[in-house]
Amino acid sequence: WTQFESWLAMQFATPDGLKPAKATENQRHHIVCIQNAASQAELYTKALVDNWADKTPDQAHAFLSKPDVTVTNKSDKDGQLPKIKALDATVKGAFGEIARQQQDELTASEAAAA
Image (cartoon, rainbow, N blue to C red; front, side, top):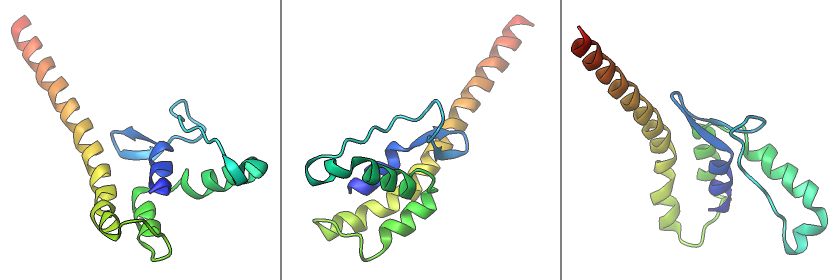
């Protein structure tokens, strides 16, 4: 699931769900190539970023669903894939709940001041 983890590291949470963090103040991924990949670190880093940084949750799900993406335990893939789309919805819901709480606090504060 290192590809999934790479995609997650290249996203950030917004009220509209997960969005690419690449080239923003929210960019937080750091790639270190090791062993054989270290000799061509720039190439592998670019490939990883180019492949994952701008994918939407739906695109990441579709890519990881393909049969050529293998995992050690097939049940992990079956169990984790649906969570990609659910995570985007969870992020949107969390921001919505924060906005509702702030509005409730503002309304209560205004009522108390009146």
